[in-house]
Image 1: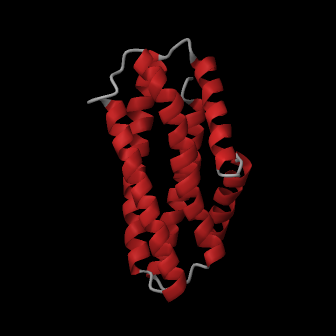
Image 2: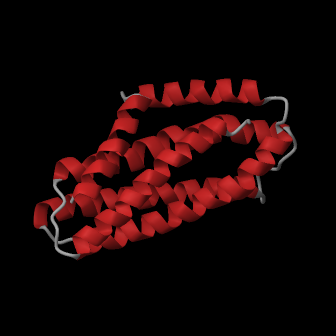
Length: 183
């Protein structure tokens, strides 16, 4: 399918969201989350989700959908672009509260920001998985190889911009998931 690469990204992002929910619970019960566990997740949220994944959608999927007749303004693409901006703002806000938490030990703002991030991104992923990607797979039928190739190219470019690779982020997800489960 045209959106396989993007769905694979969503699986990684959803694992991080689940581990964030565990982190929220741990923080609310008085557990300390060390910087080496917390900050890679912030990196993932800011860079993998916002730069890499959203870059793939904005630079490859959305233009292909526009060429196939889906309007950029006033439709699903416009909504997703707006939500991408919100996701970026929430990730930046979460990064600031994570830094304050590391400095002060006060977890309240971090918990609030993580809850807001998890809720927003969960809803966004649901819309893409159950609406946008279904439309994309239908509209772009017969172009899946070309689109997948473009998505991989954009992913490589975006990750190269931030000096990381997919394996780096997959390892962050695996480590975070294991560490939060063990706490």
